[in-house]
Length: 428
Ligand code: HAM
Image 1: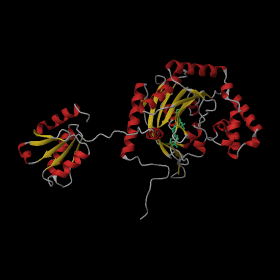
Image 2 (image 1 turned 30 degrees about the vertical axis):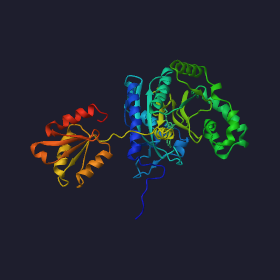
Image 3 (image 1 turned 120 degrees about the vertical axis):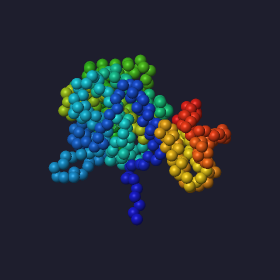
Image 4 (image 1 turned 135 degrees about the vertical axis):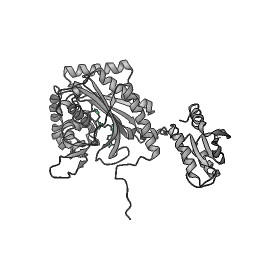
């Protein structure tokens, strides 16, 4: 027999980890509701052109990491698994004419994304993001609001020491001028550039600032920075974003080399970072303004900003500080029986309680009552409902496993009694 495994770079989220994810998703949904973002779903795959055009054909995400789906017939369109949510959300914004809705349209998606990257700690081929987008607001106030919401997520999740890195990468007025300068600068130093960076220089010179190659460090430090080349409008926007953050008491660090890996950005760009235990820096989340994307995907010119926070990395960060324990709630009661063979009565009583909204487990294994009660205690159930001869008169034994007491309760009152106990207790 072959031994099957989950594909490289993917993970099964076993119940304990899934509970951790659910907790994070709960915080994300609660924040989205508090900040006025409405949850939606987009497909896990799109026409590949949505990503090629939206994210940029020369980005790593599209060029190297896109999971392309093999066409099923000759005439079927080219599809790819979503590497992120922004392009798909904007595609949906245009498709459903959301420009006629009250602006800004604030949308959120929580779910898995796919990138064919080299797997390592904190980098997976299937990973989860909480994505939030505010479409139709030119800022600068909403820029600060989005950043503050992201920071609050980490605070509520319990991740310590998350830093906001902030930059402005200019717009279509000032960036081309800057890019020409940057290109000229690196071209002057082309003899010192590694092969990969030489290729990037042609396609996307901004990405050189993001190079992880240690030999690039000094060159990058001396390169012209976009922050010194912003046009007046971008400068004013950036100043106002910072002023709003200051006024809200949101700390940030200006990072002139922060350029982001996707092509759609303009002006505000930011990332959430945490220094990892092994010193490796990994972005926990990132985002920025993408004022040209709606138009690029066929809509009318609409300013927008958003972020995506990587949930896998948040869980890793929580595990590092020993704060990842998500609470799995034990059942309120276990339905047990004195007659190991009588699964009918146990199942009937359990169904009755579940119909009343109570969380109960029912013992279906034919084993001795003492063993059944042992298991119930081990899993921290609060009560055991014991079914015995009393059932003939419409009664059951209700054993409080925490207090160690036991009494006879009419079956008709059982759900109400348990519900009352659940309310006055941590269960439920
Ligand atoms: P991104 O920076 O590509 O931005 O991804 C956001 C976050 O997703 C990263 O900071 C990281 O935490 C997580 N992430 C990315 N790739 C992986 C991976 N292979 N494994 C685990 N986690 C990963 C975006 O995706 C943009 N759509 C953000 C955005 C929204 N900008 C505007 N609106």
